[in-house]
Amino acid sequence: MAVSTVYTTQSLNSTCSISTPAKTHLGFHQKQVVFYRRTSKKGSSSGSGSGSGSGSCVITCSAGDSQTVVIGLAADSGCGKSTFMRRLTSVFGGAAEPPKGGNPDSNTLISDMTTVICLDDYHSLDRTGRKEKGVTALDPRANDFDLMYEQVKAIKNGVAVDKPIYNHVTGLLDPPELIKPPKILVIEGLHPMFDERVRDLLDFSIYLDISNEVKFAWKIQRDMAERGHSLESIKASIEARKPDFDAYIDPQKKYADAVIEVLPTQLIPDDNEGKVLRVRLIMKEGVKNFSPVYLFDEGSTISWIPCGRKLTCSYPGIKFHYAPDSYFGNEVSILEMDGQFDRLDELIYVESHLSNISTKFYGEVTQQMLKHADFPGSNNGTGLFQTIVGLKIRDLYEQITSSKTAAPLEATKA
Ligand SMILES: Nc1ncnc2c1ncn2[C@@H]1O[C@H](COP(=O)(O)OP(=O)(O)OP(=O)(O)O)[C@@H](O)[C@H]1O
Ligand SMILES: O=C(CO)[C@H](O)[C@H](O)COP(=O)(O)O
Image (tube, rainbow, N blue to C red; front, side, top):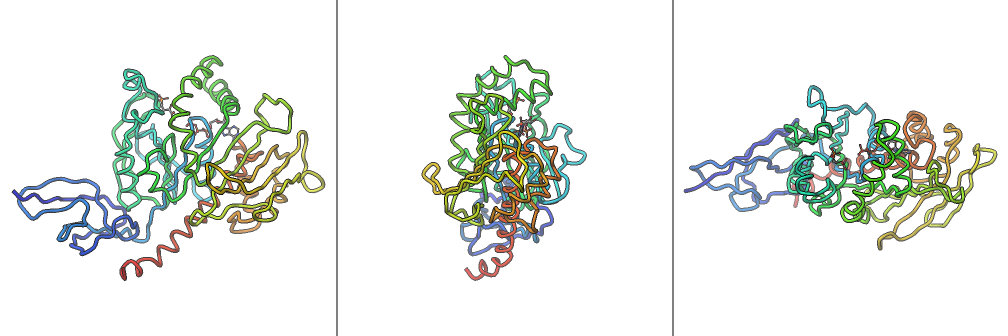
């Protein structure tokens, strides 16, 4: 008996038509073919999921002007992902808010240009399930990578999806929420670069690499001061996660296009307070639509102490370093800042010595930093580099979309 396949899509702002193309252009996400849900129907000619067979019946959706650029942000819990996201969405303008009228415990944040989804929503085991099976949330067995891949791919292709919600309050999996394709989709969480298929969907990837000492200091600050946890329980939770963190989360940094590494300062001998930080921005060379930032002279090795007449520094001062290097066998540029700013308005002096920062006007980095002076890390390299990476992502987005607007003609010719 012949079985036909009906594809239903929920493409935002898109027009869909059924066609029988000689050649389907999957994987090109501007005006393309998308499949999401599939139901089988008895009785007519055969359909194909891939759309590549001759005579395949497919639904072609044109996503209008929208093209979703996908950014991956990986880090352990409590390592500054939310703070980074707030800086990033601010660069694009507009406030990021949970879906209106939706689940109050949704992890999603939506702004005019960006939608940030938290990959915890792809936990396949809820809190009780993980406990019963004796696995942590960091373990791939507690996560549904097939669904993650299918849904990120669908969104990238301009199709809305019903994404599950992991409820951090109850520890349960809640009914799904509708995610419409945004201009920029950020997938943040523990595993954005773990699964090769998901990794291949990313237009740019970032890893926040927080050293154990600093992670501990931040956890204490948040979980003790704000959530009433004891010092022992914080230590125990970090220790319990460590083996899986080392096995499944940390290795993703080798795939990242940019890594923000946060270490204790080297300016204070034997510092154990973790307040003054040494932050390194590790930028892969040769990444499409991304050119690394540099200090003074591209490709040189530079050490710079900006403190003096133009930059006020109290103890222990500020030190910058910039050099080419290699990271997991890849050629990279590393920009480092150790120390903290006393006066954020004077940051303009540092900004004026950095190049390739993708600003739209002189002083934009300083303006962004001043705007969010109350965010954690605004007086040090974490805030500075997160802001710069945000600007680089805006630039990457603009490059991708401008090249894609020119692409359909090419695609038709092919
Ligand atoms: N750059 C920073 N400098 C100092 N402290 C920071 C910085 N970034 C984050 N923190 C501290 O870490 C805490 C967690 O930050 P944030 O909520 O951004 O992390 P997260 O990765 O989104 O956490 P989670 O995944 O647990 O929600 C903050 O409350 C703050 O105390
Ligand atoms: O590592 C995490 C990512 O944020 C959480 O620990 C994970 O999602 C499990 O959540 P819960 O604390 O609700 O058990």
